[in-house]
Length: 346
Ligand code: AOF
Ligand code: ZN
Image (cartoon, rainbow, N blue to C red):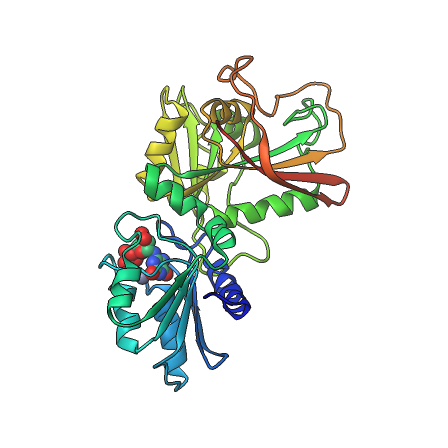
C-alpha cells in the first residue's frame, strides 16, 4: 500500500525530474530517489538522452557516498525501463543493486516499456507500487507522451497581446506589447522547449533572435532550434537567426505545409516540444489544426486599435475553431496578466 511517506519521497523525485525539463529530448525528464529506513541515500535525474537514466544516477549517488542500497526502496517518477535502448534497462540495474521495493508514478507511455516493469521486478521478489503522484508526474512528461504515441511534438502557444487582441502596435511605435516582466516570464518557456516556431513575416518585421538568454537558464540547455515557416522562402539574409553564433540551429521550412506537416518535420529533428511564438497567421494555423496542447496568454493593458490579430490570418476563417481551456490558472505580472490553460479538443 502507498503511504504519505511514499508521496513525500515521490515529491523529492519529482523535484529531481524537474531539473531535466527541456534537456532530455527525445527522452522524458525523470527523477529518482533511493530511500532506506526513512532516510534518503541518493537522488538523481536523467540529464540528457544517451546519458544514464534517473534510477542509475540515484543508485550511483547513494553508492558513491558509501551507502548499502540493498533492501532500499527506489522512488521513480516513471515506470523503470525494461529493454535496452541507448542505455541498459533500469529494471535490471535495480534488481542487481538489491532494491527490495520500487514505487513509481505512472506507466511509461513508450510502448516498448509500458507495463513490463511490474512483472520483471516482481519475478525477482521486489515489491512494486505505482500511481503515486501520478497526475503531477504525468504533467511533466506530456510532451514526451504525445511525441512517443503520435509521432508529433507537443505544442505550446505563447501569445503576448493587447486588450484588443493585437500582436503589434502601429508602425513607428516601439513594437513591445507586453511588459518586461511578461517577456522575462515568456523567456522561461523557451527553456522547456526543443524548438521555437515562427512565421516568415515575424522574421521580416521583427528580426527576432529567438535565443535563450538571461539569468536562470540551465547550463546544460542547448539553444532551441529556431524554425521559420515561409511560403515564399524570401527572408532577409542579414536576419539575426541567419548570422548570429547559433545560426546552425536555424531551420527554414518552405512551401505550403499544413500545420501537421510542419510538426512532422520537427519530429524528424527529435523535437518533442515546440513553442509557437507567432505571428498571428501561424498561431491561427496552429489553432485551426487543433494541435495546440498548452497556452500561455499574456495580456497587456493597452489598446492598439490596429495591427495583427493574435490568432487570425487566412488559415483561420470564421468558425475554424472555438475551444475552451481547462485547468486554467492566471497570475499578475506587474500590470500585465497571464492566463494559462490546456485547450480541450473534442
Ligand atoms: C527510465 N528512466 O530516466 C528515463 C526513461 O534510449 P534510452 O536507453 O535512453 O531509453 C529511452 C527510453 O527510456 C525513453 O523512450 C523512455 O521510454 C524511457 N525513459 N526510463 O527508466 C529514465 N528517461
Ligand atoms: Zn531506464
